[in-house]
Image (cartoon, rainbow, N blue to C red; front, side, top):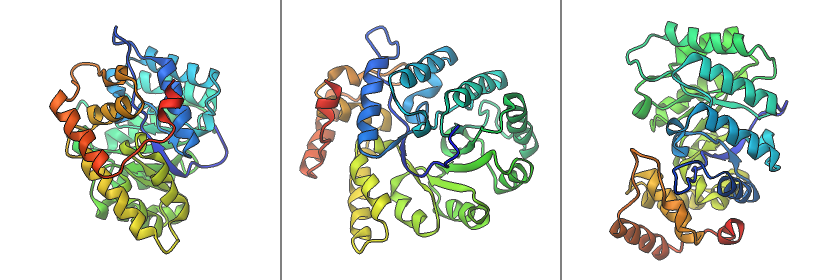
Length: 309
């Protein structure tokens, strides 16, 4: 893995599927290249990538194909946390071998009410079995979905035992006070915190945050990356308000099908509307309402259609 820690804006890249519901590597690679051209890194196999609808073999293959296609591995933070310990180890080890900049690691989430001790053993076992000092883990705290929390106490224990490997966290709690607590407690130790929405980007950067890992970076990468690069400027608050307005439009709908609807429309490629069950696309009426709202707000995705051609 890269010796340089990951910073800035990353996108949990949406995963295209063909008409047999198999991952479409070519479309994925083209979208990744467009995101990179907008200075957005790649948190492939995140929540909005439909990661938990992908098999281990599919993730391994996609990761390898992206690297072979020239996607810089050090700009990737693939999600490698699985419910099965051995799957987490296998995928994480391959990400390290390929030179990925980090791994974004969900806790095993099927069993609820698990203790910090159980989660510590899970992460510790993965680290020891991967057995590579290049490994950099970003803990993924998303209690609204996983219903399993990464507590401050757990972070403290992991940092004490693995100070160079536990690199940071993505906080998708939606609770700024929790993100602020992570920053206050651990940022001075070099622990990088990424809020899970650009709505908290400016606030996080002002507190020493590393950037953000956001679903809507799939569709609004340029403006989000611009704020991350110019957050100390006089117009930072105005930029943040603009990002919030776009985010609010997408949050009116189920996020993953809304993102894919936008990519399909502005990229002029209806194939992007396809999701893997149990997720379903927006209805025609919902898609029209979404695009009308985005157009009315002056939203664009410059260069997308050309990148996807």
